[in-house]
Image 1: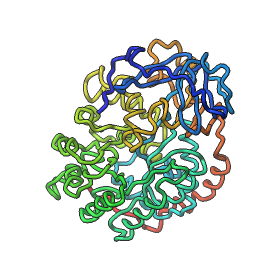
Image 2: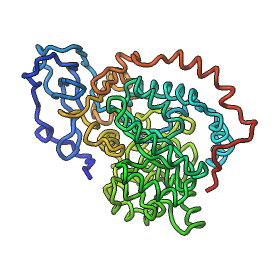
Image 3: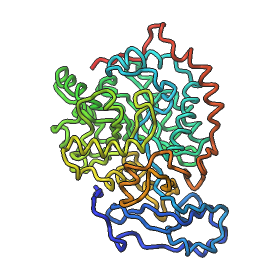
Length: 472
């Protein structure tokens, strides 16, 4: 795995400055000038190029060069980004975007009560329109927070795919299913994945999405693994979410949730595991020798809120070559979709749990937020860095505010001082989705009005129904 070293690369280690292509007949689509650009060297370490420019053609970064080199370059659009830092767009590696409609509904509850008494009864009311409105609000929130890609695992995902196509974001989408739905759940998940793969001008990738080993049988997991291999799909699921789940699985079945994934063949596929705070030492060799691309998404704010005793073992996973991407989970548990906060919390919680202030450093946290998150969602060759040939998914962050000055260590300022509200501009595939804090592809007031009208029917729990039972 590419190292996330705390060592600062020397300027000569960083990719060579490349002048914009001179042979193109058409003006550049976009030129960003005067910014500081976060770049990666060939060993994945981060550095910063000052007074730089980014040239975008056809949705792709053509060059990262000096501001002087592009002074006379024709461009359809130019952004003066003096005082700002250009970062690869953040990636929310595991969320349930439509659950913003449940934000603040299930507060101060243990996990079992959170699921059984509030969330799963409310989700039995969900309509496709509720999902669409929730997804619209969530995408607006993420764009404003500098998130350009998200991995979603939920219901009525056709509606989410529609929103992604319209708002311009990038997403890894999966239609969730439980074994209690019968074979139809698994078949619907496959049908969605095959039908939407490569849609939205290639911005949508798809995965099979069994909910978790405690809600999906071994038989269904094995069938899912076979379908993933046959159709060239990845798998996105919850597993070993907390230590209670691991201990219950051992008591009932004699195996950990990760061992379930191994014996059912899920680890032979490309798999994204949500949370993993219940991963134990005996699981690590299984993850290390997994035949597929295995990654874990960590969403630390929710773990604190649920008072889980452990967090994602980021250091142990790094040591065996498993990338850990940053995530928020759904806003029903996290209350926000702020990956910026996840980045800072991941760094701080790792220092606390490891008892070592030198781990996780700000530079390592930025590595998790960029390259490792891109690897986690299967887009490591496409996004995650600002470099020639990569899709032009990037954000501009304003560091002129009093809370980010003075800047002694730019990496530390970005991780521990800057906030999601400092993101000025968000760009995906070279298209500006937010400019100077103004959303260009979503109408938030209209969404909020309609969603508010639908909330009484959505949040009704008197019917006694649940989509599932949480019993781990």
